[in-house]
Image (cartoon, rainbow, N blue to C red; front, side):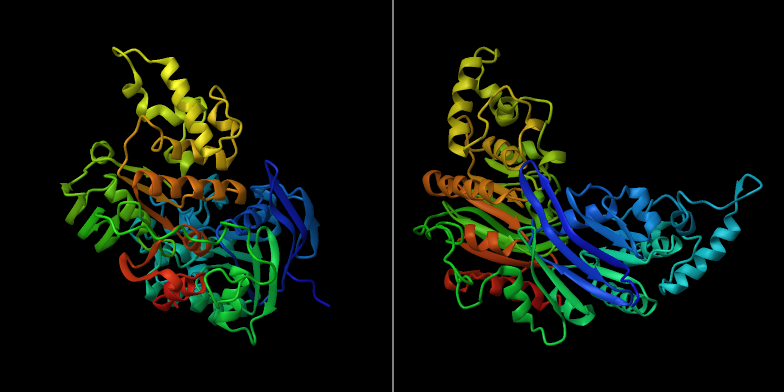
Length: 511
């Protein structure tokens, strides 16, 4: 019997006491497409990074082409025949297509790169993936779909037998997505084992031979696609039936885990967008009332993040109006937004919000230090008092003001960033959250939800958050706006706001 191209057995990985993978098994023979599904935080990215050599597993084996490994370095992963195409492509825009394909493995002749030979081989690889670009084209001039095919051609140049595609159509147009689907079908017939990570159930139904669903780091569902309905997939991903907002398989959910915050009494609007347009979104009309929590739910690339960043002044709006209460504001930079009492907690806290070497206290109070100063001199006593109250409010652990932010877990780092805008020295009318619990364990997630609910209920803060996690939307939002192709495509609230309804709504125009 022929060995499968990829066999993973008992793969386990923990981070700071949180188990991201817990005994995961996955087998993919050549000539098969295996869909890997699950919520954000389910363990998909950790599995991919273990396979690609970025993370060493704590236990388990990775077998590629019949050779078993307990861990792989990035170089060993490539040599074994594994190629991973991430959402953020690794092509170098300033190089040609051929130069990208052979980057790091250049062919030389008489001590010089043999460009002619590289271009001839590149042309054959591009033909194999049905790319329309030329080996001499500059990558910066190519559309996204062609760039992705260049990445796949590069993988084939290294004799890959296992191809992992991580959300491959997130940034593609409908036409480009259709073309990529055809290429995946071609590569399947060429004998590659393809692991296809996606949120788009229509793609799974079209392309996948088998499907594995991860939930909380474990395999919660595995089946051949034959006979699987979309409802089966939705219930496997959510772990619940689609009968109601809080319906679970088996035991009842923990108190507060899946229950939305109480609907606030009618109040004036705190945030109003009138036909607002910006990069990759618009026009968008929406309102968020005092004390209301509204979600923006959509797939990666839908325009959710760009909308939040435009409200915060990171990108200039190209048309439309933005109102905070009765005031019209036009933030052209974040300082303008902060002056209008608009704050943002970005999705990538490490790159965009956190200062790892600074203390927890400085990270949490950075925007408020000047307000607490006396005669332009920092007030250590006031800062300690405010930080102490803040750390209690967000359940920071450990509650040590002197500890550098890098020493805290992901959940507690997020609490520090969130704490900047909820301490007593700040006044925020509109709080924007981009993927508020990304990379956060379930315990810290519930604590962060509690902080946001309290902020809305007790201070009347209008909260607008973006998420691609339907469980999070159901747990936290009063209303949810479905975002598709940069526009609001629908709204769900009350009993209609269920995980199954969210998944169906977001896939309607993308299947």
